[in-house]
Image 1 (cartoon, one colour):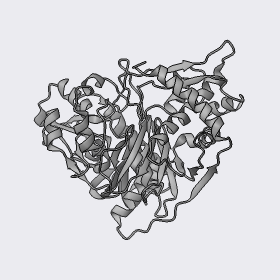
Image 2 (image 1 turned 60 degrees about the vertical axis):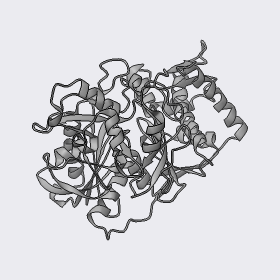
Image 3 (image 1 turned 90 degrees about the vertical axis):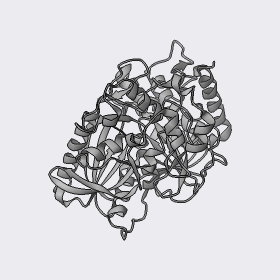
Image 4 (image 1 turned 30 degrees about the horizontal axis):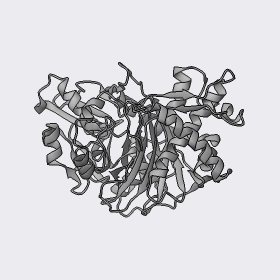
Length: 470
């Protein structure tokens, strides 16, 4: 029995999973988003921890078992979100800076892009952790010798082990701008560039293997799997061979393609990141706002009563009638990497209503995925899809139509947590045999390439208008 902890941007999901990767119990707790200034996004790190404990208790209870029956814990997490805490007290010294935060955009323009791309496979963008950490260090009075930095996985490992273990895995480390993909370790030159002491950073450990012993819900449980959410989903989707691809539809949307043992700089528009399999990397396209666009329509504009309403509204129209929504609410990620881009609605007429906005927001998710797929050398032959938005049949069909490719939806939406569970099962018992993957619904393209290209051309025009250079 594995307890899989999936700590995400808008909430924490915990699953109790058996050795055949079947879900026995679920728990969920929402996480408060804080927006203190335009472009700033923060979390309370203590609330993150509290959400994990509560969701874990719910999952164990739903599985009708006890915490002592858990054989291992697997952790997966929102990746670049940056936490800084006091080693002595174990308390955060400031709010966690979320991956979506844009406050360090100006600092990124002063970084050596070629060096960073060569060493880390990334681009200088406020999305990644290093400039967030620099900002936090500049805004705290606590001596550096007393501080510990970590992404959310490190923070949870620290809390679960009572401060005994300060660790991260290679997949999370590779999202910091500080980790050398070839050496699979913190890069001394990059640490010097940012002025960071190595002692501030966590130890890098494998994604699968016992990291330490957690004390959770009154039980001692080994932590045996750790991976960033997108790499965990890649593993959960069984994309173990070079060229296999998955896309996860969550708060953001992320396409990862297994790229074998390649460590050369990635093609334009994409980044290279460590995969959970040792020595394997993945090409990645990072879309910052996907499901968050629907959430914004619901909570910001209040034109949706519930996120699920978006599908009904989209289906009520034969088309978006030329309305496009570029959800650059926190800049644009792959393949544009434009932190100063801003959201745009265009093509509005007197007849535009909330159904048009809902449909345009769903279409925008699919358009952004096509942006990324088109940046992959040679493209992809099929997509494995997971995440909460895969329940939206309109979105999945439009995605298949737009790409001209089959979109294979996972039988279990929570493939991120399933990936963490699989890594933990293997880490706790190297003799464990993974069961065959069970696919779900497959969406086949339903329109011709010319029609898809015409829709996409309209999207590209809207993006040009949203770009900061426009």
